[in-house]
Each structure stands twice: as C-alpha cells, then as structure tokens.
Image (cartoon, rainbow, N blue to C red):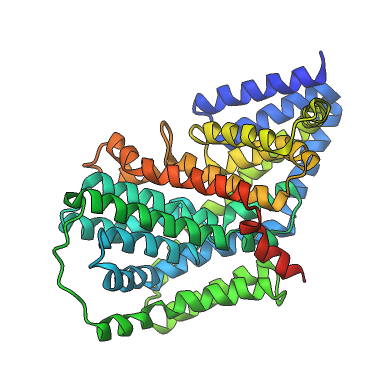
Length: 435
C-alpha cells in the first residue's frame, strides 16, 4: 500500500479513537506504533519505540514544563491570584462591566506565572464567580468572560503550549515565549473592550452598584501585585536578556514564588505536598501525550504526508496567503474537537514544512497555533475552558457559557487576521532579542 495512503488511514483511525474516548496519548501512540510496524516491520518498530521513549524523557527542553506548572501552584498557594483580582477590581469596578474587566485583568496577571488555560480558568472562577454573581451580573457574561480569560494562560508567557510547539517545531522556546507577549496584551485589551461595549449596549448585563474607591486606596492596592510583576520580569526578562534558559527561568520563578509563600506563612506540609503531587501528575500526563505524539510524528514522517503536501502546494504555485488561510480554518475547526496539546503536536509537523516553503515564519506560526487553540477552547462543541467553567458554575447551562464566550472567540480570530496582515506584532520582540 502507498505510504501516503497509509498515513491518511492512520490519521483517520486516530480521530476515530479520540472521538471514541480513548485517551489521546494512547491513541497517538497506538496509531504511530502500528503504522510504523506496517511500513517498516515489527523488528524495526520495537527498537524505535524504545529510542523514542528515551529521546522524549531525556529532552532538556521539556524540563521547563514542571517548573512552569509548579509556578502556577505556588502562585495560588501564596495568595497572588486573589490579590491580583482584588487590585484589578478596585481600579476597574466603576467602569462598565467592572468586575468582568477585573476578571480579565486577573486572568492576564495569573497567566504571567502559570502556563495553563485550564488552571487559569479554574483559579479565576473560584475568585471571580462569587463576586460577579453577588453583583447580579448576567450568567452568560460571567461565565463567558472567565472561560475566555482563561485562554490567556496559553498565550502570555510562561506557556506550556509554546514549549511543546517549540519541541515539535525544533524552534527556540525562548523566542516563542517572548513572541506571545504583545499578542497576549492585545488579546486581553480586546476582551476588555468587548465587555465594555456589550455592557454599554445592554447595561442590564452588569449593573454598577458598587461604592467608588478612593485614589489612595487604589494606589495602596498596587502593593499586592508586586510579587507577580517581580516573577514575570525575572523569568521573562532573564530569558529575553539571555541571562538564563527557559528551564532555568522556570526554576527561578518557582523558587521565588515558593519563597514568597513561605515568607507570608502560607505554606503548610499539606498544601506543599498537594502542590508537588498535582505538578507531578500533570507533568506525567503531558509527557505521556508527548511520547504518543512523537511516535505518531515519526509515523507521519515515514508516510511522507508532509513532504508530499508541501510539494503539491509548491507545484500549484499558491501564494502564502491562501495557504495560511486554509491552515487556520483547519486548525479552527479541529480546535473545537481536539484538546490543545494533541492538536498542536499532531498537526504542526504536518503543516509546518508547507508553511516554511511558502515563506511563513515558524515562530510567528507558533503564535497563530496558540490563538487557534484559544478560539477552539471557547467554541462548541468541545470547548475545554467552557466545560471547565461549567464544572465550576453548575447552575449555568453549557449553551449559555458558549453564548457568552462567542464574542471573545470572534476577537481571537480577529487578532489572528491582524497578525497575518502585520506579522511583526508577534516577531518584533523575538527579533530584537536576537540583536
């Protein structure tokens, strides 16, 4: 059988297994291994299985993941998240949709010390959900705001998605992390603008019934955000200036946040133990998915799908813009069905050679991938952060959460279009870093 046909059959079987509820890591590993057995034989596939496992678990770049994850747990443990929201609420409460604006600001701030969409959504929901409900905000606005704000965890560094994309694409993780800063800030501002416009058009969505806060109280509240700013500038600034690698930066960030939590008396044996266990479990889960994805990536390389696709595009002499639009539409559709990490790991190796061939920058495409992941996370039928939000707000139907998140998903796509027109939005900081 033609290797390319075998590759497409493998992709189809993989999607069937995922939709059947088989864990993604198992699905990719099984398809990758069996596909390799068919193309190369059992005697070659088994040693390759062993070498892939070793190469994944010994990959230095992946050591950054547990540190980035641990940073998020230590930030929550030390109370940084609560203080971020309180400070943002004091500054924004009198604006249209002030508490929702504070939720976006809190999500952006927590994203600066946590690289996970789900963790950002869950953490902010615990803090902001009761506040907005008490203020009688509209349920769709409340849940849509928090679910959408949670997606900033993938874009604003440190980001586990950028790390995984960097490993798969064999690109600089430091450059990828830096590339998400400006788009992340723009997306947070766009989310805030959407909230204010919606509330201006329909004031009943978010009544302003809170007492004003004095300027003195506002400025005093800024002391609560210094630890997040310190960690962000230490980690990202250190990577940007070349003082240390992303892995070393993650270790520095985790150490600082642990030290701050310890100094403030927030650390107990019990919560420290749970932070370590949760970090270990989440890291192991991600590593297993990566292992399965590498097996499947090797199988796709053997099938020559990416090479054939790239050659076909070159022969058709398509310009770079139709190609990227087709890829973005594909990623947007797939992102509504597939979890973020498998989607990046599965399709980045397939489309990257083609995109490079027509002139798109792989660092820039990393930002596009993360944006499409973010749009998928808040789009039906299987939006990850939406279902996380539904688990936190059990009295709000999932359909209402999707309705509340729809304007934010449109904003993500709009930012993606802006990046196509002006790629330097994502590339400016990484290119300056190289000089």
